[in-house]
Length: 270
Ligand SMILES: C[S@@+](CC[C@H](N)C(=O)[O-])C[C@H]1O[C@@H](n2cnc3c(N)ncnc32)[C@H](O)[C@@H]1O
Image (cartoon, rainbow, N blue to C red):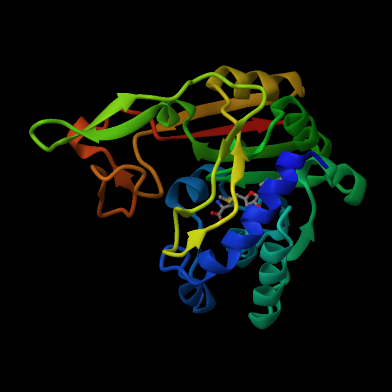
């Protein structure tokens, strides 16, 4: 396995218990029946009743089990053994019937030999993948003919910014990071908070940037037909201190008139 993917597995193993204890993930609410999927995903994926669904990069599985609560026969896949261990424990405790597989996404064709009605992946996923062409081929491999692929993820353009206070003390967005991919990826030192939870994560991790063109061309190159590509001026977490949480639960750049795309979704068929 690539040393960068191994490093990321260590990082996600360390993050898992921190996330599980966080308000952000609200595991107790999930235990009490909460559906963790967002309004956007539920509306855009549509009914999953009696459908088979493969969830790539499922973390500790609350979204996967939520699709199960909505009627899908769901399977979640993640590289982190800590995350998959917790997902299985929650599934058993709550007597749900979701299946979990611990695997590097790129190795999945070696450990799973099935086709699904829906392949789904969401929020914070593409940045962990060095090769989107191979990713898209794997999605196509696991879809039945006429099967549907759906992704909701951070918009690549949103990652070019940093926020800084101007002389009046107002936070402004500045272009700081490259938009286009760097082949090696970027190494981020440990010693920081995760996006959820207050504990410090000691292990570092590697992330890759992918432009909108790269995402679209990977999906088209795998032979899938794109139904839509949507962009949203909201995010699931407070990426910058100038963001405000709206009544609907999404974080927005209200001081910037919602002028920056923060999420995208894409639906495609085989
Ligand atoms: C931010 S989470 C996404 C899940 C979901 N949105 C959530 O917040 O629970 C990213 C997940 O990708 C997984 N991951 C990273 N690289 C992977 C790889 N090469 N193969 C499979 N999973 C991977 C991590 O272990 C982590 O659980």
